[in-house]
Length: 102
Image (cartoon, rainbow, N blue to C red; front, side, top):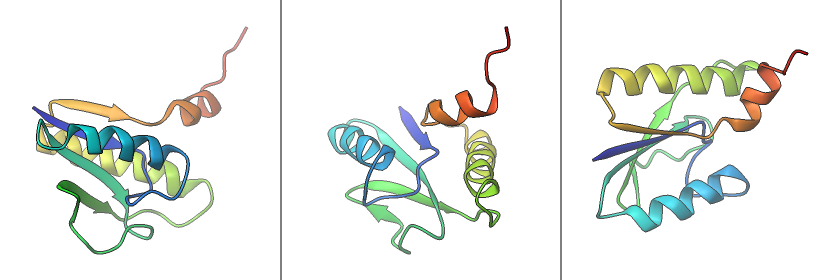
């Protein structure tokens, strides 16, 4: 099975979401074909990290556009690769973009 992680700055991890993704990914190496979509500005030019395929995605510069463009461009790329399972690390972004309206 092919699994992709979206919404991550990159690996190796430095903090936050990246550490969680790195912990999950390192436990799944050898069992699944793992792809992590990373920010091209944040991630080194290496194409693999401990057996994980890293895809560097260019983003739009800007405080608010950078994370959203990373998510959108990563999702579009993953759709064209027909990834079977997507792990999207966007919980906080979803809460901020779509607040509950009562």
